[in-house]
Length: 519
Image (cartoon, rainbow, N blue to C red):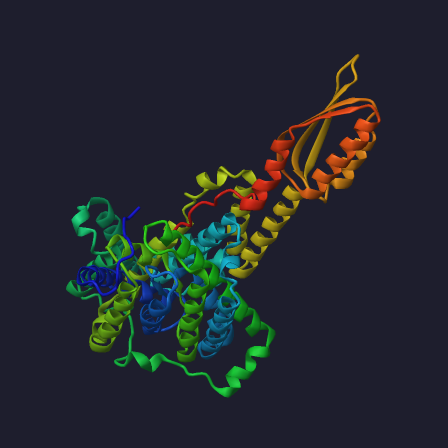
C-alpha cells in the first residue's frame, strides 16, 4: 500500500508531486480515452472531451481526491448498444439525465447503498465486460467491424482470424500492428526496470505501433480520424430530443447508465482507499461529482464517465497527493487536444484496439475466483452465471440476473435453519443442534419443535453452528425456558454466546469483508 498521506494543497513539494503524477495519468489516459470512444461507436475526440471533464470538473468536486475519472471500458458495451439503437444524438440526452439521477442520489445520501452489491456480481460484471471488449475489439484489431452481440463476436473470432491469414490483405497487416502493440505492452511491464515503468505501457505500445506503421508506410490500414477542432464532435440537446426521455427504452438507458456508472465509480473509490493512507472517500460527495460530470458530458453529447481503477492506481503509484493531480491531468488533455490534434491521425486504429483487447483480457481473467471461493461455492456460481449471462444476452440482463441470484441467496441464508434432535437412549436428555440462521422466518418451525419436547425433559441446545439469531427467536427461547422450567424440565444453553450472535450481526451486518475490486 502506498504511504500517500493528506497534505495541505498549498505546499510546493506536494504540488510538485501532483504535477508529476498528473503527467503520468495523462499519458495513461490519452490512448484509453480514444480506444474506449472507438469501441463505444463514438469519435475518438469524444473520449478525450470526457477525459477533460472527468479531470477538471469531477476532480474539483470529487469526494475521492485521488480517484481519476474518465471514459471507462466498463460502459463501452452499454454505450455501443445505445448508440446503435438511438443514435449518437440521443446518447447525450441519456447521459445528461443519468448524471442528474446520480446527483440526486448523492443529494439524498444514497452513496453507500450503491456499494450494497454482491462482490460476485460486480466482479462478474467486470469479467463479462472484459469478454465483450476482448471479443468485439479483436475484430476491430483486424480492421473489421464487430459482428453483433457478444456471443457472435466471440464465436466469430476463429473465422475472422483464418480469413485474415488466408487473404493476407490489410486485415492481416492491421492484426499484426495490434499484436505488436499488445506484445510491446506485455514486454514493457515484464522486462523494463521499475524506474522506467513510470511511462505507461499502453502509451509505449501505441508509440511503437505508430513508428512501425510510419517507417513501413502502411497506408492501407485504418488510422484514427479526428477533426482539427475537437469540439466539433459535440452534439447539443434539442427540445425534441429532450422530450423523448419518456420513452421506455430511453428511460431504461438512463437508469442503466446511472446505476452501472455509480456502482463502478464507488467500487473504484473503495479500491483507491486501500491504495493509500490519506483522506477517505466521501461517497455521497463522490456520487454528486460523478453526476455533475456526466450531466456536462450529456450536454456536450460525449461519452459518459466513471471513476477508473487503471488511471486512479497510476495516480497513486506516481505519487499523487491531492485532487490537483486529477485536475491537472484534465488540463494536459485539453492542451494536447487543442494544440496537437493532428498527431492523433498517425495512430493506427488497430493499435488502440490492441490496447483494449489487452484490457479486456485482464478484466476477463478469472483471478478473483480464489478470493470468492473463501465465501462459498455459491459466490463462485453467481460470478460464473453473471459472466455467461452478460456474454449470451447483454450487460443489463446479465447484471440483473446476478443481482436476483444474490438476493435469492440472501433470502435462503436468512431463512435456512436446520434443527437436529438427538435423544440419549435410556435417559431424559435431548440435544438440539441449531445450524443456520434463527430468524422470524423460521420461528414457527423452532416453536413447533420446542412444543413437541416432553415437559420434564433435560434439554441441551447447541449453538456452535448458528450464524445468527434475531430478537424474536431469543424471546421464544426465553419464554419457553420459563414454561419448561415450571413444568419440571430444564434447559441448558450458552445465553451469553447466543446474545453475542445477535449483537454481532447488529454491529456489522453479519457480512464478511468483500474482496477488493479488480481493475
